[in-house]
Image (cartoon, rainbow, N blue to C red; front, top):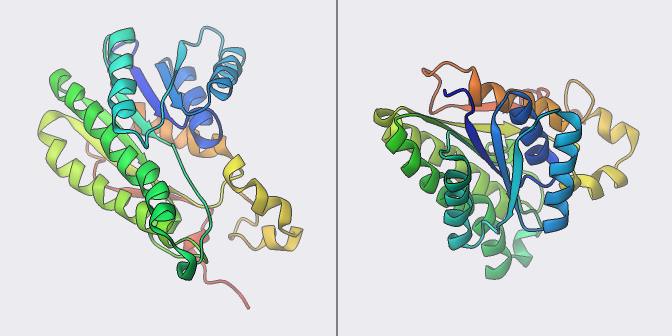
Length: 253
């Protein structure tokens, strides 16, 4: 990659997206973060600049549920920094809904952000990466792409589709020097699951996985930064589970 490669991170205002933006900035990349809330994005940029002296990070308000925002976010990175070398799709939407209560609106709200937004951002980025002859796309899936939990049919469907999309994109884009991988986190301590964490007992949290704890956003971010910068070109089309062993162990009664 070039001396100052460029990364776009969706959902960069908090959680895994924010941690990934910081890790990428620390690795020397210029970073553009996108998200729906201006104030959160501004605060995220301040946090990264405070943690990483000399960090090059900017933001753009973008709702990846809107196709035009996906294209505009990628275009701004290319216009502002001259290229786009890395895309991380960390934007998320999660609203628990029992399958008997599922509505078309609830289904669409989730899939528009989690699946369609990820795909449209990835396609927009890939078109620019193709012209440069290289690039890395990291799609954030979830253990819900492989296992199910109550009231997550829409979310699980979207995350399973992300795994499929990563495979297909890797096949189509290999000839252009673009590697595509999916990362499937387990339970990570982010604002998206804050309500669950607050309601859980210490025993509940100890039983999450063999490590008996939630993951930390920076643990995911370090791995994402590795995929973006140091992973071998031969690594593409794979889904990598980073879940503390959560999918490796059967729950005890």
